[in-house]
Length: 320
Image (cartoon, rainbow, N blue to C red; front, side, top):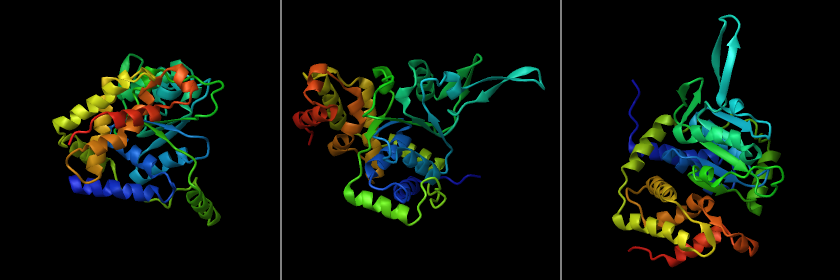
């Protein structure tokens, strides 16, 4: 009989998870925390960063420390939907077709450079992300639980890419940017490599949490108290983005629910049973930046989604 995981045990394990991943990934604590928050909210993450900032290593380390299955798919222009979700294969022994599961049947799917594959394949991933199932041969097949997609994209080189449409961007709970590490962190990375660290071998990482801890944490997050004033603050922040003169398309109600969910998860992970306006502010950028469509003329002037959100957070009155 499986032992019941308490709320405190779940929180302790997930806090330890951050430290365990830190053994392999240096200087990206915000990205590590964002992935844990996404797992607690059963949401998906869009990772953006130039090549070589440990995006793939981060996902592999997370799967190792959680003892979950993970699959990496390199998205290319010739990737077909069946290559991702699975396809029917003829079995000559039984003289019948059988379904062969694709790489999407995993716990953590790393969709590497998702914007390099055509919209048809991108949309095949959409059902898996939203419904957590795959439809093939007239049947729906549920995906393993938990299931989270971590998609990466390169923010510099866009030649030959297929930008994700707004409807699919909106399906990602968070968009996390991974910058070049600071000098001291880069020195730490090279020191570890000089000491024999191999990023392809993560056997030194220990599973410190499990799917049971995630389930207990998710239940605790859903039970978290949210004051009406904080809910109104989330709504006011999202409505303010729609009224900004720099924005052509503001945050939808789905974006507001994503911000609230992420703030609740952060509050619980921080050891509180209530959400504060500071929690909302802390998660506003990763939860909302990919949901804003700026006007072309302001983009030419160097205005960014993060800059717009900073202005909105500074203008909207904070409840006391």
